[in-house]
Image 1 (tube, rainbow, N blue to C red):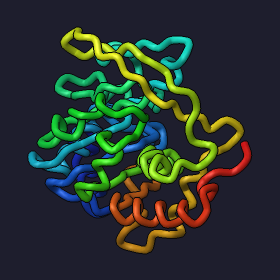
Image 2: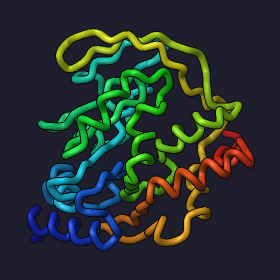
Image 3: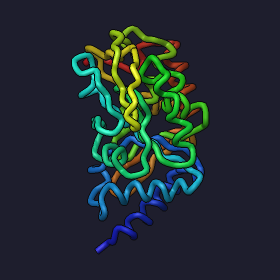
Length: 252
């Protein structure tokens, strides 16, 4: 029987082989189920990711809450509001030591050397993925995007690129939210919500625009995984959207 220590080591080696950088910053989207049976479950996966990043690295995961927070419920609590983007992300959000940015619908969870820096100013944005958001800053600091067995469609950084172009499908109404920080203080936020009514996101189309080594594909445990360099991915997506604002959507 494979122990959780053995599986953690195996995953650690696979992540390094894929191209995860020690000391780097990685935003992870994931399907825990796609990895297959993992001894130790989500904790083993998180520990392997932290092993690969090393003590100077930073691990981030989206902690999006748009499925429960919106116009009908404009209330967000950093400690209590659940995320809606998978089992690994929700486990990571609640794990001791994890920090969470203050944003009603598009918060980010993080741990590591640069976590506090990358999350600190999200609460000052007026859109989900604005210039102070971790999704935008990932490009600025040369981070990476890791997709563990979920394909590249759930690429939240793409919203930050879309916000620069403002394609016709992107924005809906402005909603004022009451956001509660971990210390219990209230922070009202007026945020232009994303819309996407009648369209399906096709961020996987970005793959055809990214040559190796900007995009690497390889196995991690039982999953096929994708690793994107954030800055080249951003630049390619922005150029495509400037040429065709509908480049990454199709009718739903």
